[in-house]
Amino acid sequence: MKYVLEFDMLEGEQWYGGKIGDGTKMPVDASREYTDNSVGPYGDQSSPFFVSNKGRYIWSEDGYITNFKYGKVKCESDTAEIVLYGGFGTLRGAYLAASKAHFPPDGNMPPELMFQVPQYCTWIEMFKFQSEKGILNYAESILKCGMPAGEILIDDGWQIDFGNWEFKPRRFKDPKGMVEKLHVMGFKVILWVVPFISPRAPAFDYLKKNDLLVKDKSGSVAMRKWWDATSAVLDLSNPRAVEWFVDVAHELEKKYGVDGFKQDAADNRFYKKDDITFGNASPNQQAEFWMRSGLNFTFNEFRASWKGGGVGVAQRLGDKCHRWQENGGLRALIPNMLLLGLTGHVFGCPDMIGGGLVSDFNFRPEFLFDHELFIRWSQCSALMPMMQYSYSLWRCRNQKTAELCRRPTYDHIKYSDYILKYARAARTTGEPIVRFMEYNYPNDPGAAKATQQFMLGEDYIVAPIVRKKTFSREVFLPSGAWKLLHSGETFTGPATITVNIPIEVLPIFEKV
Image 1 (cartoon, rainbow, N blue to C red):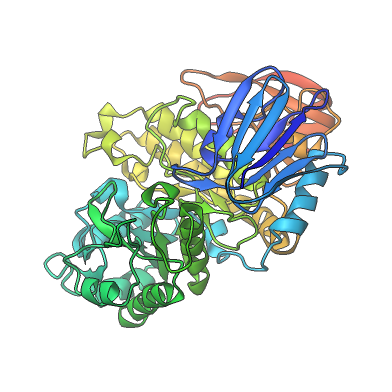
Image 2 (image 1 turned 60 degrees about the vertical axis):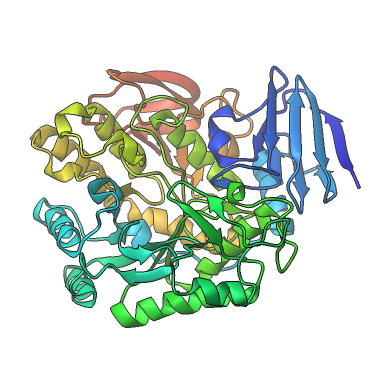
């Protein structure tokens, strides 16, 4: 059956939603075209949800194709009804109504430590050459340079193979001892895992025999090419497959003392609509089941999910390039984080500071990198719910860069109690921690267009510099009085002002 929803935009209406990677394209108004395909294939987070500043929202229980075309909206699906709801007044009103009806908060949240201090991922530093010695050296460098202990995320390369979740014995002589040393240093230890199973893994035959792997339309075990290999895939619609994964993960916790898991992959694009699965699951549903399995662990992180709104897990943005650009670089960070929150993924983390694509780094010497970009990226991440480092900026030979990248960490710690206040509230209210200006100030002209700044809760406006060799910027201030903290100046909104921003400053405005 074909389901179709068609309607006209209201005067001045602006829409937000869909794929988080399209945050830079939000909001969509009647002046342009935009298409979102949440059926797939795509990567990272997505949701069957669009919400407007005129108090309306679109919802479906499954993915659909949405076309915005100069004030006309058309949504189509082969699998589920698509409904337009209205009468909720504002962007905030519509979001809260949708959250209550379709993705209510489950009462969970990631550990408070994740909001208080940075996370440190070994990916950029070590790529796939993870080792006991390298990880301990990395942790020691963090403390030696005055950075606080936090989570250590041990990335791809620690394991013998995909689905053979044991430390490589040649690189890890005493993994349990390593974890104990990291704990003594004050770190929590998180391991990278994926739902892919190598045919070489000892568990492959067991999983195949018990129908715990996705099959292609011919009935054979599906072998999917992904960024790292060609592998079989757990059929996450089968509770026994999820149980197998959770048991393996809990055994790692018990055997080595690790604290949780970075559950990568399970993107929609690694499944097909005609796959044969236990629950006749769509690609989107496979991604959802993987994300929900993270609730079995105290520490978790996801870069891909479907319908993750209201689920109390940590959601990290997709990998960004070591670039300033809006298309996957620094200028994508704020719009994507804002959209992440406005689709219910409130416990969000930006990508690794400086970018998470290892191909941009590849063990190049530090002088080849853009030090100004690292500094501004650190500042941009500082007052988001979480922040994550990978490249060891704290030990740059350029001491000015090192210091200016360390400083935002302590801004984050300074505001962590405030961030935690909103994170705790989000467990029951579902409200974003980082918010569009329009969310808090729906009646102020200019609020909707201010998408390279954000509200932190109700009391702070954060307006980082996101362009190279730029030392001033326009900031939209909504109704009320606002104090620019680094200068002490007070301004009255609604107004758009220009402020000077030296390289060492993160512009923060506090509501007076």
